[in-house]
Image (tube, rainbow over the protein chains, first blue to last red):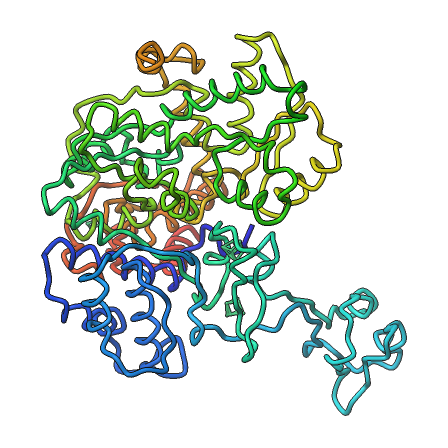
Length: 503
Length: 79
Ligand code: SF4
Ligand code: SF4
Ligand code: FES
């Protein structure tokens, strides 16, 4: 997990302020020119604070504004007011399009890729074991210290081990180190560049970059406009939501606040998780091992993209079942045909899932908890003071526990045990790199007979890039909330039975 | 005993109050008898979000609070 996950930095602050500004302008039906002011409102100092120049700081905010609206990244080669581009975009289809995760190229500080450096701990010692152990003769002892010739260095790390003063450090590019599928390469200027053929839109690099040079796109603006137009917008909220908005804000208060914002209805995505876990248990019971050797879960889109893009041979063994998001959205639309559904979650790649042909009709918007928190601020909804009336009880214990690593497989296993008397071996892939490794193992046949859970974010959905809480804290809230569910197993969920009976 | 009131309202939470709280809670594990943390509703000081997060260390009101500021204030008093 990136070291920056869960730490509040100025990067986080700027990102959230941009979201809040976009929400504010959406809510007040502002003129397009107002967008030009956002960079000045957010960077309101006289001199630069973070970068070489204040103009660059503002240009980066402007790039974030564009992406926050769902627009493409643009180079700074053409003269154009921010608002001009926005006007065209909003006039036309104003839909977010791939690529979802982008490097803001002029914000990238070109961190060296995996390199060894000599720090000033070096005492230029007489023994200089570093240069003796180096297998490619890359180290020379210069006037003040040892120097590593980066052209020759093969990053074997032997010098680092040998130095008695811990003078040699190794660091990787933070963005590339966070990317478990090696999608981050370099452009001609040595800046980070995402290879979209490899990227699975997990969003971990967004959190990991210490210069805030990577951002995803958002649908905040489109969502709020839809509410403002008076459309029938209904929310489905992912199981990791509890606790994300602070210790005084209960699940019920979050629901009440969403209604205050204009949502007609709020449902737990865990309801969809109950449905999905039953469906996947059924698939497992019917197909394993006769029709397919093992079953991979379906709920993490990045995990399924790892299969698509990196280990295509295993694709057919990842469940075809729809994700909890889709089931939850369908359960809303079933009774409310003309409604629009917004998925609120911790997840970046769900934004992409929602754009796919299969899901487009079901889910209209996807926003993150972080984006929602900014919306509440822009709308001046004080979460600690909203009145919560109704209890929410849409899902079972195991459905709510989907948000923690291991929760998905456990929910499916419980169904298999109780309904089919099967207790399969379980393999859990936790984090993107682990997802890829696990799928390669599966391809080799090592995991035959297994139920395989894949989560691109370490710790499960509570570790998602769109969360506000540190992963461990979020996990605790999820456990507690799961314990408060009126049902233990998915098949005991009354709301679900109603739906199943109908079919 | 140092008493810290930390606002966990919408504005303050958006701009880092939850992270300050987390560090405070870690500190409390070290000094269970010397530190009392109260999580409070919006203190109505966030009209301009630049003032958030708002934290009170005993009678000392800190606006635009940052973790290191709050912790050093608390530590001064614990000693
Ligand atoms: S970590 Fe950030 S600044 Fe460094 S190379 Fe990656 S994108 Fe660029
Ligand atoms: S796969 Fe994830 S970490 Fe890698 S480039 Fe894409 S979004 Fe970033
Ligand atoms: S949210 Fe902290 S003062 Fe209002």
